[in-house]
Image 1 (cartoon, rainbow, N blue to C red):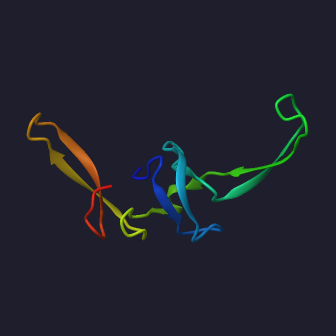
Image 2 (tube, one colour):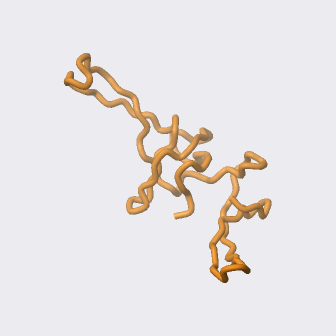
Amino acid sequence: MKIRKNDNVMVIAGNSRGKSGKVLKVYPEKQRVIIEGVNIMKRHSRPSQKNPQGGIVQREAPIHVSNVMLMDPKTNEVTRLGTKIVTDPATGKTKRLRVSKATGETM
């Protein structure tokens, strides 16, 4: 999965199309993400010790990864992702970096 926590993404399909926000949580096994301020759902809660009043609570619901696209931090436009394998000359270890297809910048 190419989307990670704290990435800025934009929703490209669904009821929240066009909205953007930061990824709060990633569920790789279900291929879903929770985005700040996007796909708000209302949950009716009973009164409890934690919430003595009860009522309607609004929170973000998960959205499928295929419906979001990563935003390039430099240009603030949506971009596709690629990978680039770089070897560290000092240690000889390889790293896999995420690269923007539009600008070629690493994420």
